Length: 120
Image (cartoon, rainbow, N blue to C red; front, side, top):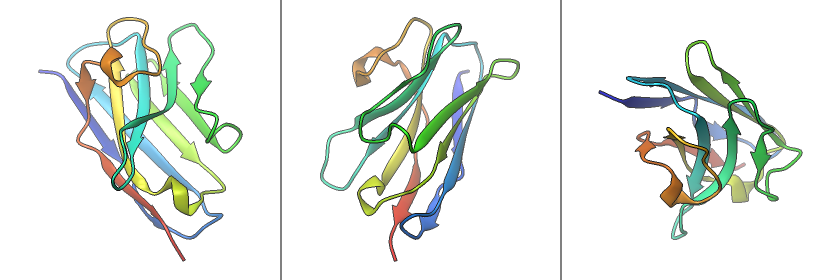
């Protein structure tokens, strides 16, 4: 049974930092990614990591967020710095057995989501 379990969300002030983690079990994945869904918005791409290839980021988070991956135990983390109120969203870990990209439809496996709230 495939499971993606996220952790690390919470409330943080603008300019602060948070680190999200996602542990995968049940199979190995080529690409692991983070998406987010803000209130009243569509789910949107944040970052992905593909084995052996450069990481990729949405323009809105480039330079502030860093995705990292531990291939030994198939975990992926998202270090979020300089957080802004517009980063407030439910963050989802996603995984693909193939080379994934920036589209929701490219990922078959999803975590349950973790809330990140940026507010003073």
